[in-house]
Length: 262
Image (cartoon, rainbow, N blue to C red; front, side):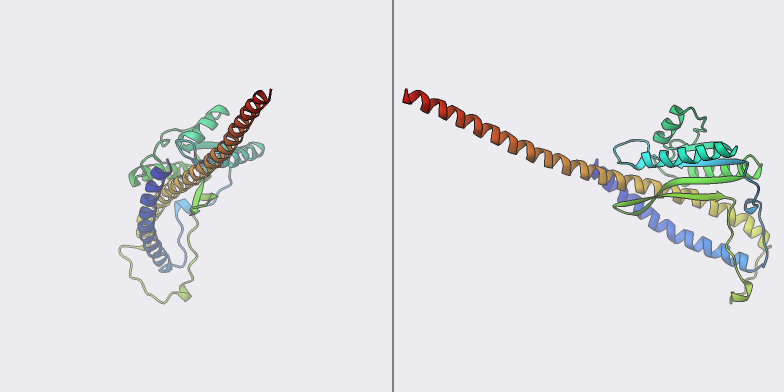
């Protein structure tokens, strides 16, 4: 399992590295578009009073990855209790069987349409989830959309991350500090309407890749720890066996010597 997770980890790391270049360029285009106009608003940046929240929780489909799934459930359960005490209704979108099982055991209703998209992360599936969340927010069925997942920091550390997906926070651009003059056709509003959904779709996709990468790193660490513990146990049992065997041989020799003396 360690070798399989290692191979998958390197594969997802390569995809993430390539995706980061695309994301940075797309973000630069979005900021450039916003710099052409001093004030721009969009439907997905409108801040409303929070009465309904949609939460997308990312976990793995299988176990044997340490506290990876337990940490997600612990944080999600705390947030659900907090929202219940505040009278805020919650829609749940689990991504991964483990978190879905915990939610079902606790009696929560979930939308399981995107449960398996983490098996083979694809942009099309992530875009469908992002579109669903955007429609939910635009129709007023959710006043805020949150993402709960593990961020891959390094091979030994996966950081539990909470991120507000919607409303989106547009980058603040001061036109006086922008040296480049942009000529936008047909209009900045039209380009923003095209760019923003792409950025949101990409955000879900990178989050999905980040989660899968963190899962494989966590499983590698768990399997390495299990292997080390097994080796230590083998050494302890071997030492105990040799001591017991030596003691048995010594007792037999003493019995033989005692019998010869009689």
